[in-house]
Image (cartoon, rainbow, N blue to C red):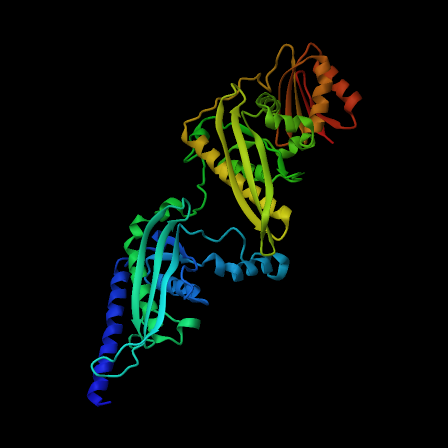
Length: 488
């Protein structure tokens, strides 16, 4: 071969590669300066084959090449495909079984989900066609043809956003391993330069097509997971009033078909309410009745729920039910789904303030831990929704009208109980109710107050308590119209 012919050959080869590089750089310009959190999240699935000629791992190689190219154009937040996620889930299992330092390993439920799935199907595959040389230079001239359909699918709705059929022809003298975008070939394409050239051309067309349709894809702002909104008196109307309502949550939980011993959804809802600034009736104050019929029935019956709420001085009762169920396994981990259904009602007029039911999932090495995590996740969704409703509707509560606790009354005695729980408080109220009428009673954060309308003096009531409940209470203070007790 003459030196001039060789120079011409390599010049043409360089020009072809440079042309593809320029084309790729133009694609990158479409997304120049696009912030990472504004990029659509997408994942490329393995290409299926509709032709028996495309054997081996060709579909997988093609999808890997496309993922790599999409990552390099800086238009998208490219996620690992589900098929390639096994190594990540193995790391999570390794961490959960106690092999890593506490808090240092990856946790379940933190991976991002795609908004768009790039799906492909190989429709044409041909290699080994012989052609003549170019410019009188014998280069072997093997040709390869590939065709594939690209579909951009909304991951949530299954809607096909756009679809395109791509058909390209490659030549052995068109590919010399010049990696201008980091594309690499392996397996079936590595030893066939014509096929590699065809793949490279097809991938560039696919990237150009996907980038051109990015504005038709779901906006990241609409779907990306963000931190829960934090509520306080600054942004919540119900917390700005002179009186902040007290809330009681009645939410039995079940893992089909077993009872959850320690409520996860209820705990999460209580946590969110307390952090926002609401007064929440302490769950420990009625823990003794949680396993009884009264608690279970109150979760299903609005009247009973309101009655129980009033018994503890709650202005709002949140009641409902939460359940979880095993859904299967993922590798060695157990997956569970949970649903939390709640209603929030005022105890003064039974007005429903909030009503909703939401679901969430979780996985873990242990089934019950997965169930509780799913319940907690669903509880987070429900409490976020409930707080949004409480804080955005201009709901206002007024101080309940009750008798003055410290003031003297002609026929009343005020009894304050410190260090009390529900059982002790109920024992006291049942006893003194035999000597008059209980006009008002509350139990919040370990302190109970009872206003007893009676003709009997405070001294006589104190004597009664000392005689009948002396082993359970110590009388700390006594006046003409008030008694202060400390539960032992």
